[in-house]
Image (cartoon, rainbow, N blue to C red; front, side):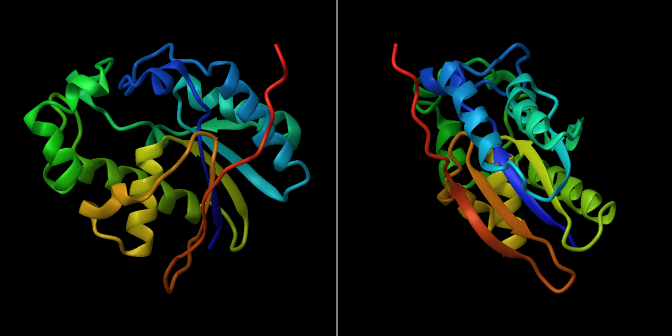
Length: 205
């Protein structure tokens, strides 16, 4: 079965300002996020990658595009890699949201959480894991494939494939533009790398 390199998109101003972007269109990488995407691409130069898949949201595609150029592979969008549908929480301040009653469920019992007008964490986990399983069947054993996605979908996938209960998935941390590697096997999956962050230096002003 293939090896999946899961990459979170780079930084954007929603991350920086503490806003819930969700699936809001028009959320682009900021300068730091662009630098992170470039550094990620440079790190992957020469890697034996067979395919690059991405969430259809702009911040993910903008992270995948420098990798595409370095590896001379097209970026294939997959809706299964998209961010969680947070419904009415989209574009809201995390500081304000964490004062509400539902935030306690998000933090303490995410398996019981449904975003108002959006997905449950359980639904999102099934979606992302089904996408990974589908892609695994489309590739040869030991193929290295890249999936550019978002923090929560990546954490949910890792939790599922290593047998971590859904209520504990938020103990995992996935930084912007970090690498997480899963070896998906018939007899069980292995987590090879979690949250590997690329070192880079911003140019001086």
